[in-house]
Length: 319
Image 1 (cartoon, helix red, strand yellow):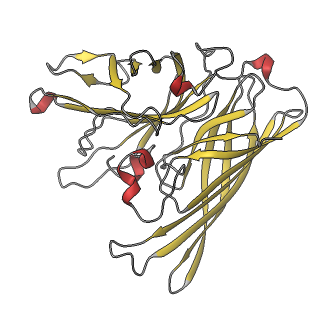
Image 2 (cartoon, rainbow, N blue to C red; image 1 turned 45 degrees about the vertical axis):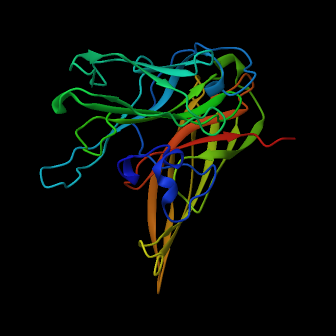
């Protein structure tokens, strides 16, 4: 992926070589505009396994991040766009071991080898049991039309999986977005509890962290959800010597919508420790949605400061 600020599922790809980082702690991403209405999921009913391993067509819930490089190589600011219900769909076909991404060509400008605009891309699953990193497609057209695309997905949980679609995997920052999303079986409005509380713990987080954790507590009686976010990473140089340890802790709360989607404003502190300790205030936003017939799982993403968005999946702890 191009840089840490545009990566979503980096731990499935090249980010594993960075300092720290472990296992299910995948990559980071930025926040979208206010939540939009989402249509009912097209894959319904209990899933015998994760959406990434269950044939069907799924709506997506996520954000597209775009940056453009200047002539001198300087990377411009990242712009964000929350996905609408018609922007992007994922079809999983376990019989052919493929993912097919169907998208709105007026939103995502993707070309084939002849320079024609397309609205679908198909990827072969290369590692179905280990994160399903998918080989990039390279359209061998002339340089002006050359497209490098990649699709990644984690198995996730029984009702929600994480995904990332990169529409121009060539490190050029030419304005093509990296799209981070979750997909699966959204909780229908009637399936969201009308009372009681529930706690959720993160099981997958995108980002190259030494340690990371998200805890959420939903109060269904008042339709609110609280979030606690913790990140820790060694910002070490290539030598691994003289690094700065960065720790972030943030909290916040927000309303749960009738469709099970929510946005939480995050506020907290960032502490950097090297020869001295420096603490500063930091803010961000977490956006998510309830998944499963009993709202037992959560999928979404968050952004802190000016970092790239971070995708996550959270589940209720086993009784």
